[in-house]
Image (cartoon, rainbow, N blue to C red; front, side):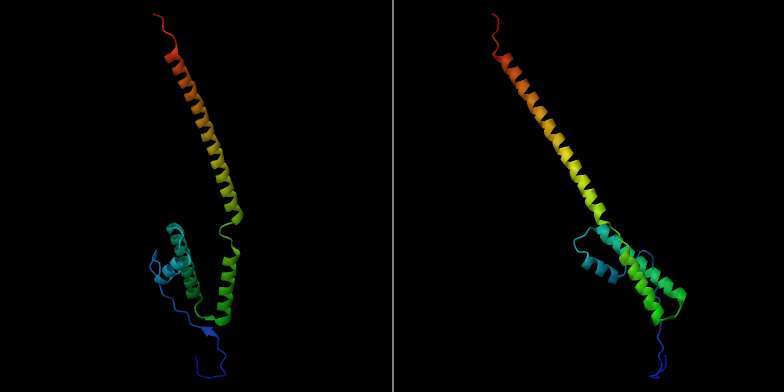
Length: 141
C-alpha cells in the first residue's frame, strides 16, 4: 500500500497460519469453554471441531483466492455468517417431540410397574391367607 491519502485501495492481505490436524487452538478452546459452560464434554468437543473446521475452510478459501478486495472479503464473510445463522442445527420441535415420546414411554413403564406390584401384592395376600388357613385348620387326631 502507498502512503498517498487519496489512494482508495481496499485490498486486504490475508495471512494463512497452518494448523496441525485435530489440534484445537487455545482461542477456540477458551471461547467454547466460556460460552458453553455446563454443557457436556461431547457437545463442547464437537463445537470446537466445528469451529476449527470452519477456520480451516476459511483459511483454505482465502489461500486459494490470494489477495481479496475488502468488499469481496466482507461479502464472503457475510454470506458465510448468514448461511450458518440460517441453518438450524437442532430443531426445537424434534427435541420437544423426543421428550414427549420419552415421557410417554416412562409413564407406560411406570403404569406397568405399578400393575405388576399390585398383582404381586394380591398374590402375596392370597398366599398369606392360604398359609393362615393351613395353620389354623383343625387337625385330625
